Picture (spheres, rainbow, N blue to C red):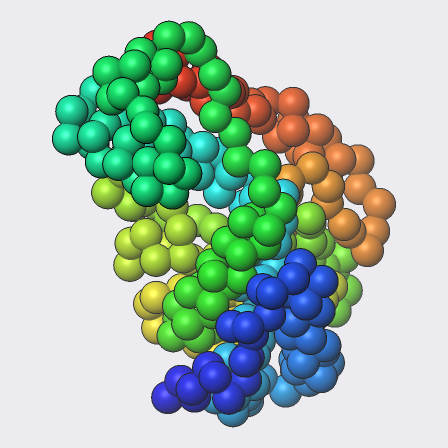
Length: 274
């Protein structure tokens, strides 16, 4: 049974400043350290409170990486551009926007002139607020924390004579052979969704929605398969307790083929994605 989150993470007032928010996230990392040590000692029995704490730590590891921040910033830009498109092309939405501006500023604006101003050129729509990004990290972490807590956990064990698991700057490696309704994947995009999260050289968490064993001993080939998934989900760097030309080769291949998202433009009343 999931314990009340309020008893563990009373962070809802921390966004009065960026410093307080960062301090709150650091506090969660500190709370997770004893649990990490316990798991590394292969003591896998966690009470509900510790399980929730560790779920929050994994969620934070996913929501705090550059990959997530870029995707959220782009989504925000697209939403804002679509709202502008609606206002520019819908009379009722235009009148509502003008009324809102008039109430807020006292400025008397002609709706038709406002529409012409909106559609008269091209502007880039871009989310640049660090405070907004931090709030999204916090809110997504809380959402994912609950989902991860409820997933079925299996601890994957590497052989003692194996090089072991590596990790990356995006350590939560999500997979879903089915995918969501729009083709995207996430921790709950379908019942087949699952992820791996390396904990140490000899230990990796597998979380899925299907029941599995508490632990699973992998051979060297399966460890390398997990590592390949970690590398392919890396933002730009992998961290390994060993040197490997093949690991570097895979990472270089992944990074070289990764495309960057273009600009989101509002061009004469329409959204354009570059």
